[in-house]
Image (cartoon, rainbow, N blue to C red):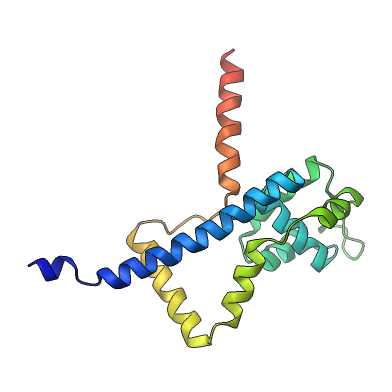
Length: 175
């Protein structure tokens, strides 16, 4: 019975250690962004991808960040509010909206640290296809087992900034 309890313990620990290392890499990177340039790691990641893509739609930027359009849109809105990104009708199609770096966003990028998200994406792309597919299937199964599937997840650690704001708004409203 004791050996049954430890079934897979080595593999489970290996997975947990891997997740811990990845989360630490992402958290340290996000803290460096906040400390060095004063914006969240998610915002900096979007700025960096926008610099690479050039003026583009939110959908294109979502493809560049490998995340959902609604997550990118929320981050872009905060970047526009800070004067780091501009939004205007597309010159090719006035019905489409195009976002681009503002001069302040370009200046901020010159001071910014590299982001772990880009490192993670590059590492995933370097994996052999079979290994990457196995990792994708395994993570999907784990997410499903934990009941976490469904809504599109926000960019890394961006959701941590929202609840603080909501609580503050509730407190302000009660005052």
